[in-house]
Image 1 (spheres, one colour):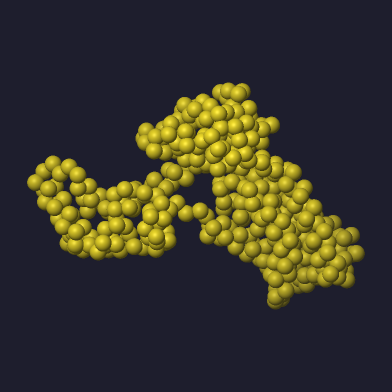
Image 2 (tube, rainbow over the protein chains, first blue to last red):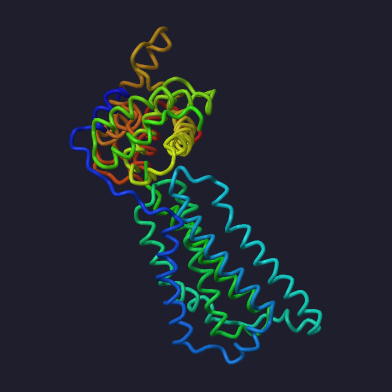
Length: 214
Length: 185
């Protein structure tokens, strides 16, 4: 088709008006508004872990919780930016930086604990509750983000889906550690972080499956 | 972007409100700019490819008018669409070229045989096409001769895209077999 004809067709007299989509920074506010009460309710329903007080006094625990929250926030922001053509690509890399830092801090803690406990921290115990608990805890943040992404453009779909899944999983992981004692450090790394990685990968795979066909 | 006309953002904001005249003015105003940008981003692309990229950009702009924030400049928004859609068009072209290489070998272009050898090849092809089941002929006509996008060919043939891809592959295999060129499959 000739480009002039295309323009004539696109700019037909019955051009429907459209409501501008929310800016990512504003959408994040709505996401927090929906997700934080749901995560708090989940911690309350499951009951805070018995050693929560000492944990909150431990700077290492607080650092990893803060990094989980930052990863969730940045991943949600990246998901909301990825579908917008005028948002630069570097914003999509932000959650990777936070995720790398989070993993590095957890790895360092694991290393230090493994020395102080003579390898005790490296023992991995089966923790079958992690995956379903993270998936369930992350349900409301995931649904809230999907609702906010309904009007996202069909651009960079992998990044949209991966980051949305990472945001929900990281938020769930931050909440999970408040009600679920992880046993050893390595158990936490393998089962909890493994669940976050698995759910994020499933999100990316969903983006591929739901990609519009041409 | 320095080369943005300040009126673009007004026209784009008006287009969001449903002003068709402002929208047409905007599309015609940005057309040469988009072509220039596409040529500088993909210097190796042919004129037809550039026009395809520009048309895809206009279509994507139409579908995503709601994503424009009127408080921001319009050029980065338009260029963002051009970059992302253009990259998709280029990837699609490369995949398509790979798929078509074998068909080119089978000399599907029956229009202008210049030599005796070509004439024989074209006749063979015509006979082979005639010997194909009607459904295979219809699929090859839509996907390879008319070169329709898979989605459109799927809508016209009534087959889903994955089924259409498989059916195309099988139709080509049968055609090659009929032409005595089934090695390599």
